[in-house]
Image 1 (cartoon, rainbow, N blue to C red):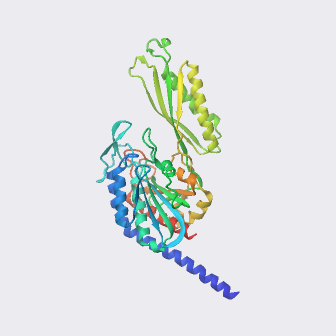
Image 2 (cartoon, one colour; image 1 turned 180 degrees about the vertical axis):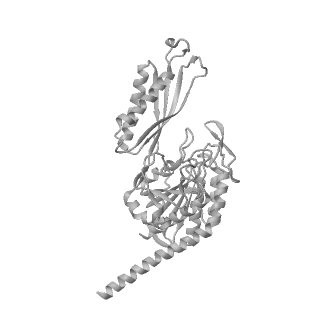
Image 3 (cartoon, rainbow, N blue to C red; image 1 turned 120 degrees about the vertical axis):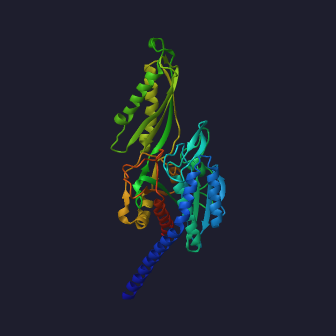
Length: 429
């Protein structure tokens, strides 16, 4: 009995020492790689490109991966890039994903590597900026690819690095993003067992991680509502059918869907009209107009009910004004869902990377992410990494998708540590 206890004690010691050695090794690798990652980040930031148009971005990713020693695959989901690392020992296949597209936003941040790029969006020339931090995601994943390549003989499994275009949505009339990558078989050959993804966050302090089990980000649907009336002079509205008044009533009535039809103690939901287009002159009632909006849900049944009620409310409200209406709602993204079993298994890895006190359990967020398409196929874990510099108040910094959005280079270090820890720990377990 004493001999058995001694063997178990030594075995426990050796396992914990292995873990400690791995952590020390990761720390050294991150320190050695950070300079390259920052340099890459600045390049990607300066050369931001829109969804499905990430041509220079993809070329640069391929160049860096090739220089490391990989043989990357290109042209996946239009501009996506994939590289595979076969470890020196048998084990599971882990997927690591970074999104690579920018946004039609003009940068106002005063930094030497600010974006001055232009692109075409909905037929118009627009400024382009990495206003959501995807430039850091690319660079973090490239850093992880470099570090894992340096210790590939010790890696007990296979890693598939997925550089995904069009997370912000494919251009009108095109497919793209994670959904298209899945359709084209990115999770196959070799079959991925689990996938990890991160998102840097401007309102989270550097050195902090945020995560939760189950739904962490909402499902999203975009909608368009077309209203047709009858044009008339503004001084004689009784001669026409006013689509502007009809639109105003529809907007008000849509808000009652969430406030009066949804059981909000179960899950939050949001319906927002973000744009109205119609009319050309102050004294002319236009013949028609259209509205654009977004729908955010965290419960599948509520999502179904809301989409149905939007059509009913818009149709009945238009009928009450003698107007005609058409409602178009896209298929959208599903809920970004962290499988509870995978969350429980990998939470210690995140706590070890950041320190237990620096991993925050958060409530669901009504933003959306097409990482959810990967999670529909296989277990996946998605989490947030702090990008707010220590000298700034996270509550006062500019948000994502804005001209003044900024995340600090120093935030990428923890992103690399977390992805390395998740990969190696998952393989070991």
